[in-house]
Image 1 (cartoon, rainbow, N blue to C red):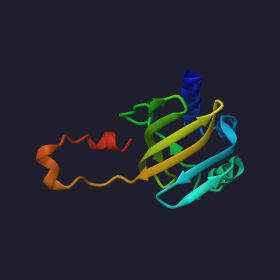
Image 2: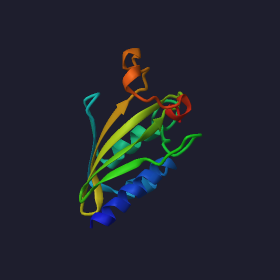
Image 3: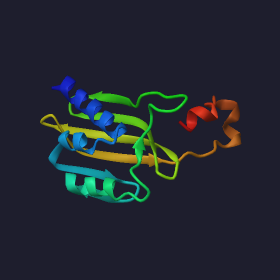
Image 4: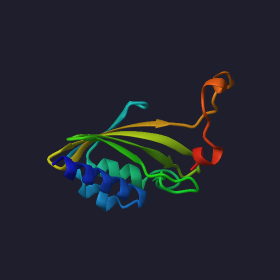
Length: 141
């Protein structure tokens, strides 16, 4: 089942990248729950998730890790019933944030996602001697 679960996560990410909400729904368990720990929100059920997508001010945010000049596919790691997806999401206002999703599956369906969102920020100057910096174009993909 582990290979099938990874394929399910890959299909879900592809559906997010193309804004195919129907395909996303097919991959979610009937008792699906999504959590945003940073805002303290819990989305219970596919209908509530879909309503958020359809009513997002300005249009639907898009998974955009694999678009742009320095594109790279979202990174998926994990095995069994637990996977981590690291990528980017671009909001209708043009801002691109980093996204980490902890994805849990049960019986071949995604039954829980915990999402962490991180806005870009300037690196502090004091770290310059100790780090390598990505090109600005790569950060804004």
